[in-house]
Each structure stands twice: as structure tokens, then as C-alpha cells.
Figure 1 (cartoon, rainbow, N blue to C red):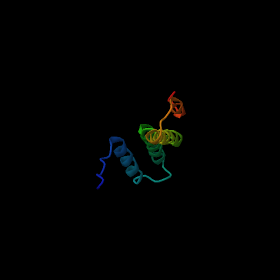
Figure 2 (figure 1 turned 135 degrees about the vertical axis):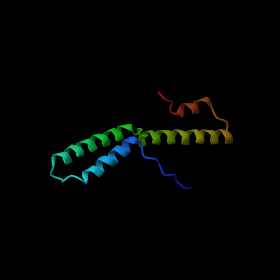
Figure 3 (figure 1 turned 90 degrees about the vertical axis):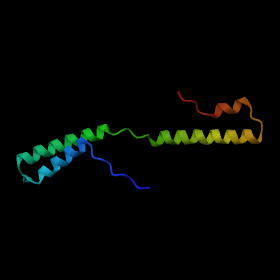
Figure 4 (figure 1 turned 30 degrees about the vertical axis):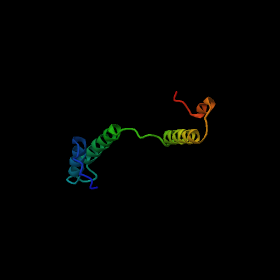
Length: 93
């Protein structure tokens, strides 16, 4: 019901520290630019660590297969099913 507060990782803490250190430099200084480069690199690392999401195409195929299987099972419950009906299910490659 209540979501627990996630403890920040070391990478997130490093990003926070770098962002806080930006406040002590002026936007036109060379140190500011270097810190921004470091923040950009840290963000890229953070994005690379995140797991890949399942694509919508894959979810559509999975749901269509499940729906097909459920329809076949329902049909089998009501009527006799022949062996040819199982060929309609897409098999993984």
C-alpha cells in the first residue's frame, strides 16, 4: 500500500554531489563545464544500468497468443477439438 523510499545508489549520490557543486561555480567558468561533462557521463552510466523494457510488439504477440490459447481451451471445453486447431498457436522460434 505504501511505497518504501528507495535508498539512493552510489551513482545517484555522485550525481547529486556533482549537481550541488555546480552551485559554487559560475555558469561561465571552466570548472562548471567540467562538472557538467561529468554529470552527463554519470547520467549515461545510470541509463545504461537500467534494464531494457519489453517492447510493445512483444507484449502484443504474447497477449494475442494467450487470447488464442484461451479461445482454444474454451472451444475444447464446449466442443471436441481436432489436432489441426493447435497449429493456430504461434510457436516460439
